[in-house]
Image 1 (cartoon, rainbow, N blue to C red):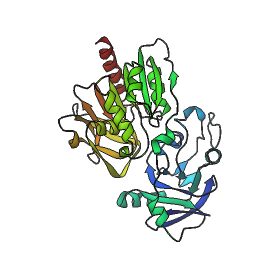
Image 2: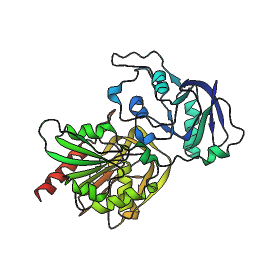
Image 3: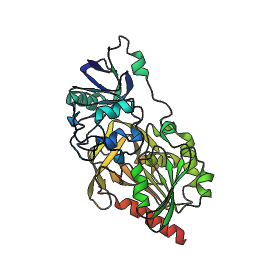
Length: 354
């Protein structure tokens, strides 16, 4: 027997699986019906307790080839987990994987009920434990610090282009998903991935055709160094920002960000292209959003979420820069917005020609 205790005092009884020990973190929910392997290995979930709204998780096992990065989440909550996966690609069960990565899990929870609480009250801290704590003050005060530095690579790494090399792209890793690199290399890009501690001078010294700013965890305002470095190279080289990269770019150009009530997490988030009037389905994982109005005169909003009206994309005229809140490279899909990567490479080509 185990418990999921929310910082508002609500207690849910369940059954422990995965690793032993307590897990404390911000409790968030994700609505993907598939892609739990990608969720478990997405560095953007660093320090969070992730709850799947889809009721059965683990039925196709865990495949290392599909990993997006190193698991950084703090805990895992599901309604029911399957410990006997049926899939010729499966290498280990969900339970075995969580034990391997030392991630505590809890099942048997009414995830629909918990999701409704988070939608009404907003995301909150929670703990997976064997005994509910009598004093919730430590839970309420918990904060996961230095999220980006915990998940970023610590040294540069080069990934060669598949086939003929067309472009040289620098990727700044704030917790980058591996499929960002795959999506670039298969388009003929030689990718140099730099840690989040890279300076603007180091970025420009590599003479890249373009710079991609990756996804990552946490509050964008917690990364003033990264913001300052972006300010140092933006306008000098084409820039494409995804997720946290989108938010950090806005801050670098004088914009503001805000924490959403419960965020967007899952593979079914709609985004509307404000110029074309077309709506795409996208994969997202974020708890903060850019305030488009705060960038008036500098940036133009390009995509908007039709559900809550939040900003999903910006472009910055005259700076060869555009950013999106969602994931055009999503490994688990959908792939509706993959054309944005090609749009970025078109900017790179124009920049190279001068």
